[in-house]
Amino acid sequence: MNAVIAIDGPSASGKSTVARRLAAGAGYLFVDSGALYRGITWKALKNDMDVNSESVIDGVVDSVDFDFFTKDGAVCFRIDGVEPGLELRTEKINTKVSIIATYPSVREKVVSLLRGMRELGNLVIEGRDITTAVFPDARYKFYLDASPEERARRRHVEMAEREDIAEEAVLDSITKRDEIDTTRERDPLRVAEDAEIVDTTSMDLEEVIDYIAGRIEV
Ligand code: CDP
Image (cartoon, rainbow, N blue to C red; front, side, top):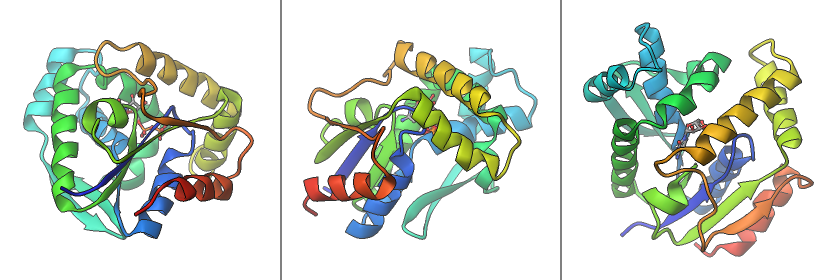
């Protein structure tokens, strides 16, 4: 069975950059699980569908065709033949993705696709329910956290390259998303009992990577 290093945490806690770098260092494949939830949201919005209607989104889940491939050490995908790329990271998707991620049909589909990725190789995978629901048997489990203000600052720097958005609006958006993600009925974001919490509020990226790399043996 291939090894899994699982990292959960709230928005902009540094999970994806840290996971990508750890994967590169270990020769593991990097998986951004949130991208799959974003992909389903992208397809729904592209087709002018109502994301507030669970039955409408159930239909999207039934018809969506994910085609996975590996590129630059990461698991990537096309949806219905198209690679959505940075379109997944817009504020429009940010505001809707957590709504569709509450729907059981969406979660079942994504969890099953993510579990299948273990066949592709050893994984470093990040998200909200990886340590608790997707791979509870992961070899290493981390929960990355940081204060909401610090997370908003980081996410704003990242988004400002592509979109004109104020830092306060980013803080408001990630706070709303945290609330939905931590209170949803199915597989909410929480700290797994056996996960190590890493508070990155006053750490820079290199410090976080060095710290976690020092905790794992691959
Ligand atoms: O990059 P960021 O941390 O802002 O978000 P993401 O990892 O792309 O995840 C987007 C959204 O997908 C989250 O806010 C959750 O609502 C949902 N998600 C989830 O429910 N479970 C996961 N394992 C990953 C993401």
